[in-house]
Image (tube, rainbow, N blue to C red):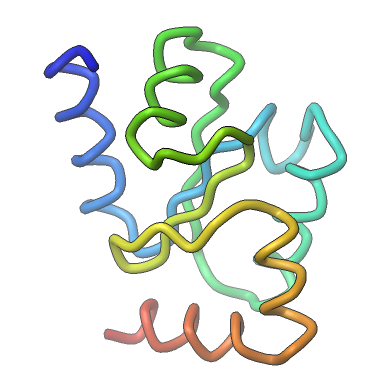
Length: 107
């Protein structure tokens, strides 16, 4: 991976308690998985940052290499890769995601 891109991704993750790489924006998601992910985080009432990977083809590929995860969206909480939409939904349904997110935001 391009070292400049790697540094950019590392900075985005380090500087945001919740970082979501998604297709589109929170107000205009461009896929159902991104929409579902944003909806979960909005329901928690916590701040989160997003990056629209559709605006940057290099980032779109780079984030997949960075996380070793093939799909978008990708979510990082407190600097750690959590997963994509399916994992988030499972964690949310088990009640694990909200406590993880709120702990991160309040730390």
